Length: 97
Image (cartoon, rainbow, N blue to C red):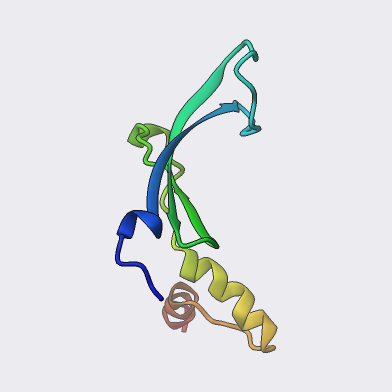
């Protein structure tokens, strides 16, 4: 029979996490520069667990925005044996004619 008490099935706990600058988990005794995070761990039932970390970072430290679809498209065209002609190359050919 299913229990109607949510606390027996859903739990949210907080767990501290310390990482080195290389992203390796370190203990409390570790000295030197570390990043300290607090993870929210969500458990649903006995077998489903997930960790959530909300972080802030300056926009200046983010990598440049890139068009991942266009980047992947290069490999997709190669995979099917087609040579893709870009709009810029097409414009160049038209201007040369």
